[in-house]
Length: 230
Image (cartoon, rainbow, N blue to C red):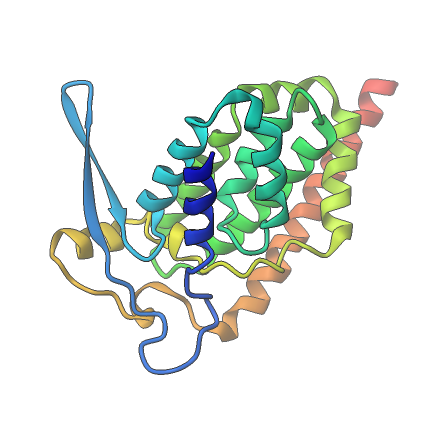
């Protein structure tokens, strides 16, 4: 558990996406190779990249089961500091004990992940949304399929909370999932902000589009509930 806390604290040092100054968003991607059933998997690491967050998740998964509640609480408290992928870990850890919190964490994590991936210049980084959402585990999916009323309440609560765009972590964790970061890493090339992060002037339009999409999804969930009741 101590190691888990230390790694989480390290993630808090990630440079925020709105950092100012010369080369403030410079990133230094590298490759981590992991043996995988006779083959090898490669992940981009460096500056709290995709591979780094996976290592942190693995550390959390290795913690004692009786510490699950404490870990979930800590991750939730740091939801505006850590990359949003850790909200899916909150969902996984609380789906049995606190299903309302699990769904709230899931929808908040998904919305923030979409926002982070949308700010990446490399469109292949959008695949991180599915890869990250899967970290929540099958029990969360089963809960959404079996309890649409609870799902509707959680989605509505996230929309009304105003927290979707209050995260402070750099979207680099999501952008480093894309092909551009991978090719930079295997070529030992640094990536200045202009090569991986969209200019801040387009972010408001992205926020508007995501907000509309969430509202549309909420409307569809409500339509489904009405259809079931008739």
